[in-house]
Image (tube, rainbow, N blue to C red):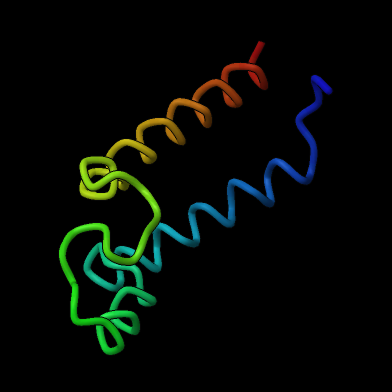
Length: 79
């Protein structure tokens, strides 16, 4: 829609909040710890429906993509 509105800023804030939660929990999702209690298999990616290579590096990959998107939004605001 070519608009930067309130919904975008709410979405960015929610992703940043999720990042803060991950940092507080040592880069682990709090739900992973819960899942480990009920599952014998606790190898990489047992709690997420992604290929193992992506599950292992998802925070790095998706943080880079998110950061690039935020940079593009800031660029659009400044131009």
